[in-house]
Image (cartoon, rainbow, N blue to C red; front, top):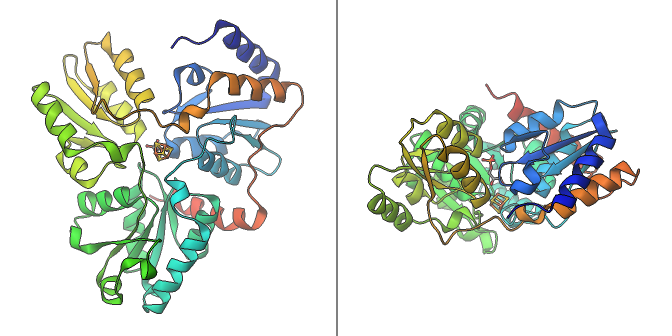
Length: 354
Ligand code: 13P
Ligand code: SF4
């Protein structure tokens, strides 16, 4: 839907008043009405790096979800303030691993006598607490654009990986990129005693996958891939690695949001694409590339927006920018010092990956 012209003007004016004091970051899943005000757009990895590269900005307004704003706070200096325009913009996947559950899991691994061989690798889509746990136990963070390198690094440090919280990204990377088999992976269910696993299963596993998933990407199915191939002959299927293993295995290409965009930029005119990721991004890409004769469709019409990403709308952005312009610091995301110290260790290991 077209943005309200009055709100557009107010956002523009507030941004102008703030000048270099504000830097607006926008994740690719944000609404068009919001993304038009982003100084940079990117996937989770690029935004983490871009946030850290703006020491002159007093305010970082993060148009994305809570864990991204936390990561930006961790990676920026103490006097920079990170603002999330709507505090309800969380991530259901990140919520699937709490600090208590993960501590309990580590106890289970210790009981099984394997915790010394295990290196935690946590997806960016996790709370600062989980990142701190990861840093404390010698592990690293990864995003969908560097998960393979993170796993390679982790298997140089230890024999097993505890992958949190997205089982699909963990499994897809292990099997598709690292040549492991499905049997090398077990799923740890935090709602069951011992994770629902026997000690023998834990000892035999190479990848211990946390039982978390993305509610948006989890809805693409093998059937969606088969249907689109039947409907559009010659279509290329390109999906995000948060999709289930069977979807990723049936797709032609797999990658992060940034990778999806780069792939379509490089695609020849006349090519046809079915994209398995969040709807705001797919629609934007379909519109953008239509004039170049690239046909882009959504992989499955029953899958929709990420509801928490969509919480950040133009009214919330205007409110945040106008408040900042008037000197009111609203919706600050601030990670406490101790958590920050260990979470930063894990994030810096990621940034240092080759
Ligand atoms: P990327 O932008 O890193 O591909 O991540 C997708 C996502 O789900 C962010 O929440
Ligand atoms: Fe979380 Fe999925 Fe939304 Fe990304 S798309 S923010 S993983 S719920």
